[in-house]
Length: 389
Image (cartoon, helix red, strand yellow):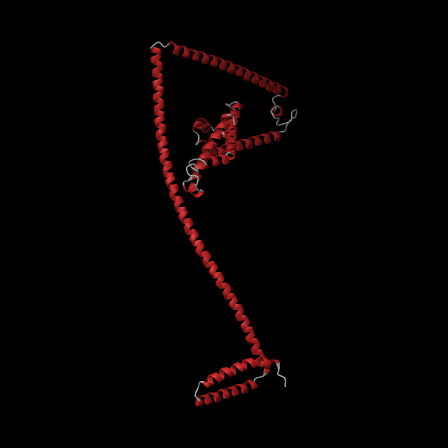
């Protein structure tokens, strides 16, 4: 009779079990071997009877449950392995972050120490600069006194060449003064002529309309039309609402100009403090009244000043602002060349061709370059201001 596949597949394990059982029983004494063999046969028979009493469906259910439990165990093992790998990765990342934080803290502490030392050095240098400035001022005063004494001594000694030179200079100054006086007198005559012409126009306008407000507004609109560039069309009779809008627009322009002037002053002051020769003209500008006060002085009803005062004040604001813009733009365009020049100097690689970037940063090269750019910006601003902004 042919064997079933299940029987053929289980033949090999049964043969192995028989061989192992036979080998184990052979090593025991005969009495012990018989007793143990009887006990095994009895246990096999008992289990066979118990297995025969269980329904076949229960066996299939247990097998499926065992298979499901094996699959769940495999999934849990995979999850556990993934969790362990994730934990190891997070632990390594944490250790690296802690090490990096410690390194950054060390770098910050080093930079803070260098900054404090640099600030102390700057304070000492400023003190030395102040002392040097005072000494220079005293020396200049002494030089001026000695020059005056020398001139007096030369005059007393009968040095006619010095006297002739001074006399030529005096004549040139007198000629310049006379020329300026003539120009001033001509300007006064021109101003008087313009004032008389405007007064005549105003009188004619008042005479033709009996001094009405509409004629005055029309005359003001004509002046706006004659402005360069024109601000209004000529030959119109504006209503009162147009005059109100004119005043409102003037107030807005005045507020804007005043706020702009006050806003740029701190920046201009910080730019100019790096350039000594600009200190005096900037001090004159900074001490001058604000645009709001100048406008109020110009439009004062009883003691108003000429509009030229406001014009000069606005031209000064324009000149300083344009100089700051042009100086800043020129400084930015020069950064590449200035940086290359500094890196090739003694501060950079001039003293050591193998010098690294970290050495440059350690010696505060970037701070020195920043100070250099500030001084360059002040120098460019001074050039733009000298050439008229």
